Image 1 (cartoon, rainbow, N blue to C red):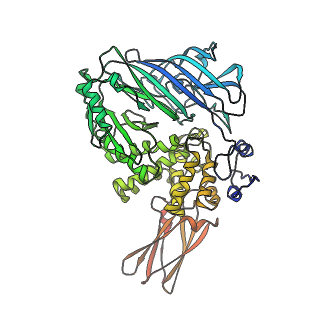
Image 2 (cartoon, rainbow, N blue to C red; image 1 turned 60 degrees about the vertical axis):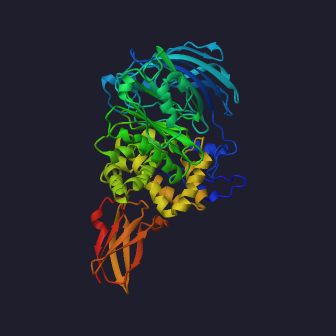
Image 3 (spheres, helix red, strand yellow; image 1 turned 90 degrees about the horizontal axis):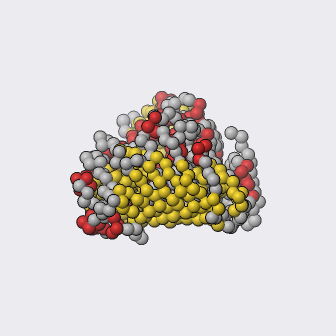
Length: 623
């Protein structure tokens, strides 16, 4: 990738040097010129983002499998631009036969997609034919929406739930995960304008921070679990189950709110033909819900620093892993709040639904069941809950830069796994499940720079650039900076961009500022290169109790490593070296260790930083 040197003389900028020598695309250069972004990593003085207030009434017909609804969107154009058109996003159109997709789907995945029955903007009717719409469609406005002006959109719509469930759809004939279920205004931002990229099912999402009120109509005996605060439990739950649910909001213990038999017997919900379940959430990037008439319902809560957060699980009776989910979620919320990233869980609730996707949503996760491997099942929950921070606390553009959220979720999964399962077990899982398949492949797509737009990647290239390589990069940086400085810098980034839309350079420059030094050598090494991990010992020299070890960095990545020395009496001595060994940009380095006894051999051990050619990481010492 061609390097572009970019330096802006911004008035009063104390950290200008931190921003030099990183490739910056032309559209993002414009953001710095317009001062919507800052080279310190902070939002610029002219930063803005648009916002919608959504009032949604939706009905899920369990017999026809049709989701229908109406919504009023109050959309504020905070941008400096007059908008001559508006982009409407409806992710569920991924199920239409002619939608572009990243892979093969079965016939049960396909549906007829969205039908907009009526659309009014500021009281003016628009005739819309959604036949040719994909997951995002453009609409020319009869009158431009001026800068700082507000538009009111009223939409009536319906679509069928797909039979083949993934991120959403029919989990079984009487259980539904209803996500991406309403037309929304796509993001209009300061560096791309309208977000017009289609959803192709492989990548993920980018949404504004909006306010939501949802009224969800479900037939009697169906319980609804949702994003947000549950507004009317008294109106939809029968007294005994209302009592149990309310108890769960105040206690650490697990409350079995409803069993399968109680659900099927019609004891749980009010017995009106249709119940209306009401939920509300403010300043979040998405909203979803699930419903079932036979799932087990467990609940509890966990005391955090400033609040008590509800945790709930809904699952098929007998799922051995989901029977533990409520307990696991209590632990995750507390651990993430106190340890890494060390910022309090920001929402009032977290709910897990047994489904198929292993997918995150604000305040909800949709996980497959792994009853025969509880370690894997728990780490799956940990990973999806970690997404609370990336991309929901930080409004990340996952479609373009998936490493900004998946890399962090993978890192947090590893760190909490050390606490839950012990360091050796966590290391083994991370190596086997994350690193091994990347480092052992010589395919060209494995070595594309992490900064490559995720929407331009596919297959293993997408997966490893999104999850594995950035996670290793974050852990290498943690090793280089030390925990205290790393957390300080991370917190500065998260403070700068909470409730906003960071892009990679905002992260790089925030971390530079938080660390108090330019880390651009590290960003170039890990994010803008075709590097991989491959160290080689070329020579050792032993003199007067000190051993010099010559190392070639064949692969190029700035990785930490241990020198494991075997002494003449068979004892083992480990010496750790951080990525600072490679800070000068050198591809060759000499490190020195000392020992009280003669050293017979040395081994470079990268741990989770697995080496492409491990056989040349060891050397016999000639004394």
